[in-house]
Amino acid sequence: APVFNDAGAAQIVPSATDRLLGQVGPWTFTLAPDDSVEGAFLADYVDRSVHARKVILFYENDEFGQSLRESLLREFARRRIVVLAQVGVFPNSDFEPLLAAALNAGRPDALVMATRETEAGTIAKLAFGRRPGVPIVASDGALRPERLVELSGAGLANIRAVAFWVPDTTDAH
Picture (cartoon, helix red, strand yellow):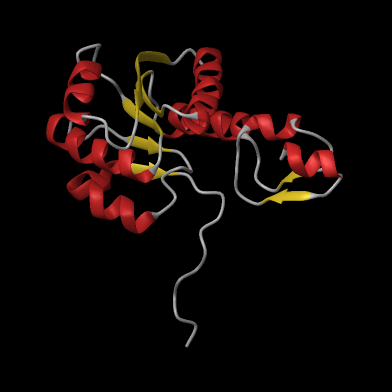
């Protein structure tokens, strides 16, 4: 983005949500709302639809997850939703002990995933074995539904995932 802005060339970013893109320069245009909007939406859903008062937050330990984590924490605090644990993850994390340690922090009403589909699906599968009925609210990072289905197993029943847009893959004929 800085290269495009220095050259005065427009850059259209169709799906990135990092709030920092809005600060890069006048030639960077995002089509999707930034993480503050997604964080507010997810927190509202956790509050009003799931009715969760205590959550465990898993976040991708990179710019995407950290930015969304900040927005979620702000919104959870505003709504008086207690975050029992915050767990930074990577695709190759050892999820079983991370989930076990997080669950030792208290009994959550929901798990919130500011992660991609690999992490969300893997955690959903493991969580189903430990807390079968706990809702899992996943961010737009879990955007590849087929991968989420493949990884989550029986935990898929507990997942509610956000997407800004998912293309229709049905055959029109």
